[in-house]
Length: 253
Image (tube, rainbow, N blue to C red; front, side, top):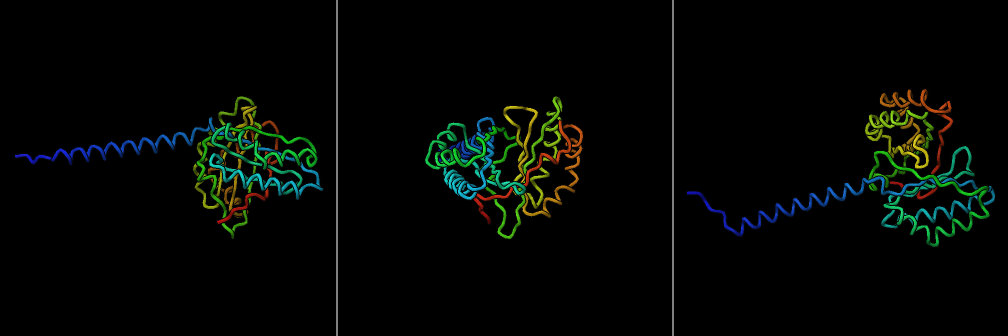
């Protein structure tokens, strides 16, 4: 004689299975939504600051970065100056959507940057809208270097020859996860400029100069180097490299 399962137990099991299924779907939906890069507002802003205003402008831009990081819609905000030209500052931002970014830019911290910029900047700031390729999560963007690290941040602009941009993306697609798994890599992101699909920018954050040297000799990088040496509009590609020094938020483990 078959043993009967009480109706109450059957109901509990069914409900549990439904709950797990619903939770899994919710988790999947959340993950899917997080990686919809077309909805994410990502920008790079370049400021060229007059020498006498550099310290003051860095301070006010730092305040903007710190305030933005506390906003639930912010994915990342970081500010840097160029190692070889401290008058040039770069602000990197990613928001959950354009509306959230627009709303934040109407607050007092943003207005303070705009107000000072009218007298502190050599020329108006340049805002570059970008789309991340193979985007990373907010948690990954918020990863930081350790206190003992000597962080090295590289930005590389790539102006591809027309018709080769898909090849460039394919080359990076093959190498990206390997790059991101390197022990000395904190952040590695390739983005495409919204205004011109043949233009790209990489954002590469390493724990040290040694980690960067390891990356340059890492075998998976060779197809990328080969592309850069043959398929961009202006050589050498090294002219597109910017060495950046972080000044906000300067968070460390």
